Amino acid sequence: MTRTLQGIVEHGDARGRQLGFPTANLQTDRAAELDGVWAGFADVEGFGRYMATVSIGHRPTYYPDTAATLVEVHLLDFDADIYGCRVAVELTAFLRGQVRCANEQELVALIAEDVRVRRRMASADTVTALWPWMGQISL
Ligand SMILES: Cc1cc2nc3c(=O)[nH]c(=O)nc-3n(C[C@H](O)[C@H](O)[C@H](O)COP(=O)(O)O)c2cc1C
Image (cartoon, rainbow, N blue to C red; front, side):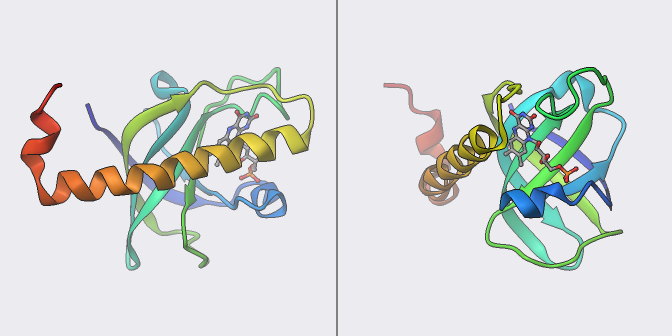
């Protein structure tokens, strides 16, 4: 089942860019029940539709004791300042839960793998778009 949420991009800590995975942080109120890392799509107002990996949670690696839930969208093959834009996100697959990493390298390796998995899903998305009935077949 695809879940959707949308919000306006606000400024984050800008740490994502340093890690190599910049994120658009969304201001949205219905995220807590979606805690985890997701694959999906993001429609960015004025830019179009992009593949995305989405982190929903409280960044346990950095903030083990806070409960505030953040929605952070990493857009694949995209680089522009979209602060203030409306972004609509479709979560198509749950990838994993949030992990409290021992260090930054561990976190970067995890996120890089999330992005690889998302890219591999792209070929499956294409098949479903061209032949929707194929998604109905169970073997
Ligand atoms: C695909 C993806 C997966 C993530 N997974 C985790 C995670 O398992 N644990 C964690 O503490 N943070 C995770 N994060 C959040 C990063 O810690 C966060 O994006 C980074 O610290 C930058 O934060 P900022 O946008 O506030 O600068 C993930 C981010 C992305 C994009």
